[in-house]
Length: 322
Image (tube, rainbow, N blue to C red; front, side, top):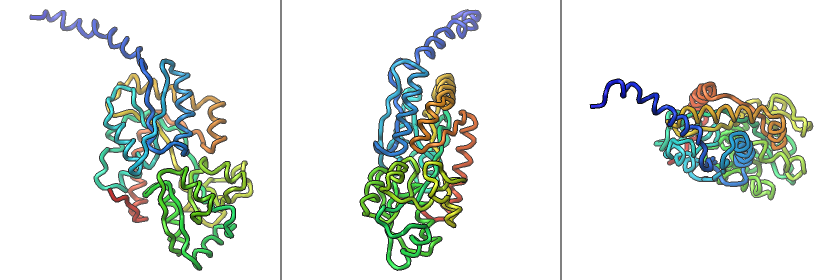
């Protein structure tokens, strides 16, 4: 038999081993899974954040892996099922970690229970854009055009925020519009520029440079005030559609059960990164507003957003067929 004194001493003897194991993290590259194709706004954000986390934490660094498909379910469920060892993270959005719970029947992951929140990163506004050659120069003109002919609109995927907001516009305007879903925002943007579709509700980072270059026309942006980079573009409220002001938000998660010390270190590093003026400026240049929120507060925020999206889905009736 092992003496009782030895049993009592065992935690003390093991604690240095545990501490050394925690200090060893990361001993290999940390995967940051983005559940969208390359080139979209979430991908751009992930690469900027991964670079700073790697510099702050040190070690072999952080590697972004794009795993798009299935309304962002493919990449998200892959993280939920990954070993909870701190080497696989999810950098995703309100779609994956709030909206899908309401929109998808038999969702193969639980947005709250299957993940350990690390922190909120940023938020972005949505904007309604049309091709530069479109005769519609205002939101009212686009609605009027939709009463004389059937319009088409792009989205970054069935059930995405861009789908919900665009369909809300169509219903509020009293028009019929054909939904053309894409796998991510990059191709949707390209086809809007080319005039394949009549309009697209996009995250602002996805279209900001194209609007500034005159290749797309922005009819409204869902911001509380006009944006300095495009002062001629009205806000959603100014355009007569305050209900179009729906922000997207982005965060970082680990699989549930990830080591608490690793989650805490990641959360601290993320807050440090988002306090750096250089990163804040970089994110702003590509259309993001840094919106840091530490792990505990972010978890509470996410739970509130899950409830909000359930209400929104009930209102619009948009659901994703599994």
